[in-house]
Length: 372
Ligand SMILES: [Zn+2]
Image (cartoon, rainbow, N blue to C red; front, side, top):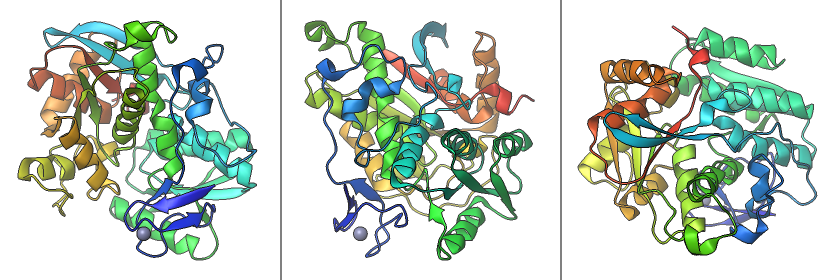
């Protein structure tokens, strides 16, 4: 297996110790991505591994799975319209991150890695710790000291070594990058191309669930949603969905891409700002505190691809305030959907925007992670 740099396009053998391009520092892509084919879905598998034929992994590696994926798609009235909510918070560790982690940890296991680290403000760290524990890999998680206590407790209970780093989120990443220079395998959910191999399956599932039958291609051609609404932090679920919908379009399963709507907090809106200003890359921003801590990332690594996906699909990105997030979290709970504040940004966007047609919105993290 080989990786290709998404910036300078240099190709290199895939290696767990090399987490980004050594030439230019850009993020890697898997050199040969696999195609989606409806007839290759393993309908007996109740997890995202039903799409195994479309997921790239190192040769001969195992699948480290806890039944992630195939989350419910629930149609309900919200904000005066019908919305299909994809309940990603029902994953094994309580967030959508498990989609990427199952593929990333499978790759590490296939490579024989016994100890690896990630940096995270919470959900990715908890997911990483859970799957590493399941695979028998020792996890080290670098996290800001101010991250949610419930999330830190969740990371620790899986047996991971937790490094609490004082200062802003970027300090945790700096501390981990220093550890990698001493030989630590940096299994970054944000940098690894395996993450997107997992998150792209959310689009496949939405397509299967909206259309009902995987094998009936005639009915499926009209089956895609008109809008896909998702939070954007690093953008792994947003970009994964984009890639998944592109795969579906290439396979003739949907006739057009949904408009992709990304939602950020007003405290940290680099993508929304770039859309507003018509930029191709996110510019540095002045970060403010927000209750949506899980998407407070000032410099998304794959900003260029996120912005290109928004433009290609005639989508947009917006920023919502903490008071809108509070109100949306409450409104979602009053229809039985209990999510953490970061995930409620999607509800806030639905309450503000007027979207017509089939709307799918992803609810990414459980309310139990941040109950108050
Ligand atoms: Zn490069």
